Amino acid sequence: MVLFVNDQGRYFVFTDPDSCLYPLGDSFGNAMHTLLLGYSYGASLTCDS
Image (cartoon, rainbow, N blue to C red; front, side, top):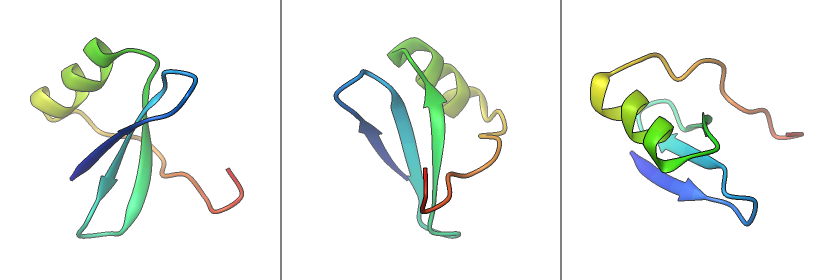
């Protein structure tokens, strides 16, 4: 996994096994909560997003 943050402070994770980018939310705490507790990332972003 690779964790990214954009200029607006939104967090994303790229997962290597499926080569998808997933939004994790607007705070570091929410992102870590999802990653560390193993919650579902939800739907991945499409190339248009």
